[in-house]
Image (cartoon, rainbow, N blue to C red; front, side, top):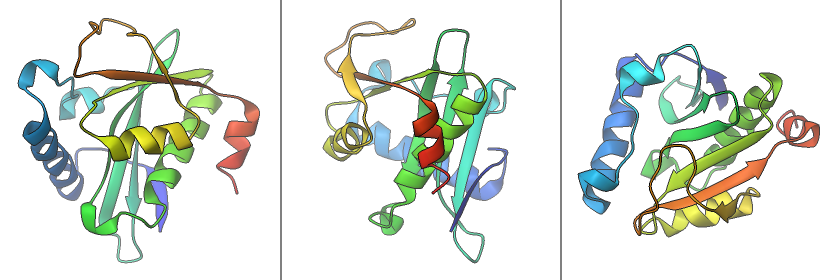
Length: 159
């Protein structure tokens, strides 16, 4: 399996994002969802990575939106049938290393309380709960997390 930066504007990646949207739609009302559309994921300040198997099938994706103060993890998703194989760890490690190499020293994210697997995953990757950031409102259906990046974080993705 490989994880590399790619364009989100590919049919198999668009299908991944559609699966993620359908999953999110089943959990949260529209006013509690802060998803980025395809055009936003294609902007120059976005690092977008895709995990592919040996047959080049897209198994997962993730993004970091870079701004002046921090990067924001968005659109992390692994197909249900591909979970439990370390794909999410490779995605987040690649995103963290790429963000660090681009000058980012802190990553933040917003997820939801109805995703215990995501909360456990991010906690296991060193993310801690924090208050709302950026333009996000405090909301009972939002969980905010953050992580400081270091050269050690970047180096761990090379392993």
